[in-house]
Image (cartoon, rainbow, N blue to C red; front, side, top):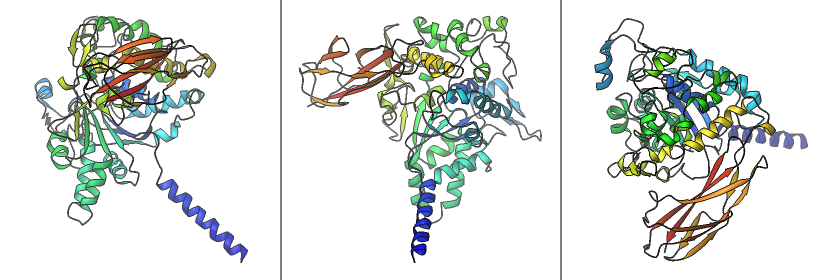
Length: 501
C-alpha cells in the first residue's frame, strides 16, 4: 500500500512539474525580434545580444522590408508599394538581400564570448538557446504575407501559447511575417466559436514596437483586423541612433558616437564586436548595391555627412529593445514616461497606439528648442557608456570591468499638496565598490504640472518644494540619476511621481 501511495505522489509531482514547465511565469519581458538584416539591423543585433540577460528572447526571425527582400528565385519582378523605394529602385527581382546566414554567424560569435559574459550575469542565455530560436520568415518580397513560413508559424505559436505575460514583437523591418502569423490565426479561428476568445487573448498579450512602416502590411492588414493590439510606433526619436544621427544629435554629444569612443568599443573586444559595422572599417556590408561605408574615401563623402574612421553608422532599431531594459525608470508599462527606448504618447484617436512626434517632443537644452528626437537623445551618454561596459564584459573578468550601480527610494509614488517640501533620501550601492553620486531633476514634459519645482540637493539627498501654483491632480516626475565613478561611468535611475491632492 505504501508503495502505491508513494508511486501516486511521484506521478502527481511529475505532472505538476510538467505543468509548470509548460506554463512558465515570465518575470522578465518576453520578446521576439523580426529583422531584415540591414547594416543597422546587424549593429542593433550585436548590441541586443549583449543585453539578452535583461529580457527573455522568445524568437529571432528574419523577415523582409521595403529595403531588403530575397526574391522567389523564379525571376518574378516586383515593384514596391512604398513611394520612396518605388522611385529609387523601380522593378526588381530582389533587393539588397544580405542572405540568411548573418543571423547565425552573429549568434555563433555570441557563443564565443558567452563564457565570459556569464562571469558578469548568470542570466545570459546559452548559444544553443538563441540558435534554436532562429527562424526564417516571409522574405521573398516586401510585404509578402500570402504563405505560412517557419518564422510566421513560430510567432503564431507564441501568440497562442498560455503565457499571458506581454509579448513584445520588435519590428526592425517590415511587419509582414507578423501579419502572416496573425492572418493564419484568423484563418484558423475566424468562423469558429473560439474566435472571440482567441482574438481577445492575442490582443491582450501582443505589443508591437515598430520603427517606421517598412512595408504596407500594418496599415493594410494588422490595423484594420487587429485594432486592439498595442502598438508602440517610433518614427522620429530613433534617428538619434540612425543614419541621420549627426543631424539629430547635438554636437556636444557627438563624441559618444565618434570613432575615438566607438573604435574602443568595437576593437579588441572579441569576435562579436569585431562584426560590428562602422565607417571606414574595411568591412563591406553584405547585400549592399553600393558600399558607401567601409572605405575612408567613401566615409568622408557619404550622403549622410562626413565621417571619420570607426564613427557610428546606425542602430536605428535599438530603441525597440532598450525599452525592455529595466534601468529603474518604470517605462516598460508606461511608454509615455520615457526611458532608454524613447518616449511614446497614447494616440488621441487610436487608444491602442502610442506614438512619438509633436506630443512626445522634449526641450533640448543644447539647441534651446523643442525637439522631436530629444526624448531619445537625452540618454545617449548613459546608453553609450553602458554599451562600452558590455563590450568589456566580453573579454574581462568581473573585478576588472564595471557594473551598474543600484539606487532605491522608500516610495516611488507620493501624494503632496501645493507648496509642500518633500525630502528624498535615496539608498545607493555598487557591486564594484565604486562611489555613487546622485543628480535630481524634474522631467517636466512628462508631468502634467508645468511649473518648475525647487530642488535643493545636499549630498545624496534632495529637498523638493512643490510649486505653490500646482493644481489638484497635477503630477510631477522627479528623476533620480545615480552614476558611479567606474570606467566607463554607469548610470541607473529611480522615478518618483508626486501627485498633488
